[in-house]
Length: 138
Image (cartoon, rainbow, N blue to C red; front, side, top):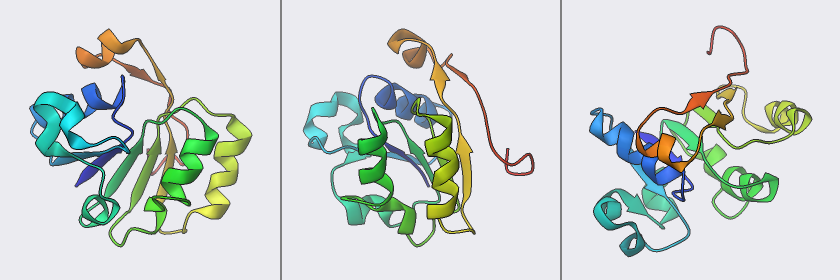
C-alpha cells in the first residue's frame, strides 16, 4: 500500500489522485477522518492501522519537526514492518535529508522529492517533483 502522511492542502489531493489512478493508497493525518469529506474512508488517524500494510510512505508535512514525528517520533513510520520506500515531498534542507539516510534502516529506499505547484496543481494531478536519491532507486 502507498501511504500519504499529511493530508492537508497538498497531501489530500495527492491521495485522491493516486486513488483515481487505481493505486491502493491510504492517508494518515493527526486530524480525524471525518474532516476529509469524500476521502473519509481512506484517511485514518490510527498509527497501527496506517502502518499495517504500508509499503511506500510519502511524507507531505510542513517542516523538519513534523517529518521527525512521522518518521521517528509520534508516528514512527520508518519502522513499519513492510516499508521499503520513503519519499519525502516536503521542502527541507538538503543537509537534513542527506542526514536521514543514516537514520532510516538501510533496506528502505529514501527519495527526496520536494514538489512545485499550488493546491490547484495538486487537485489537478499536475505537480512537478524535483527528485534526489540513488539512481537505481529513482
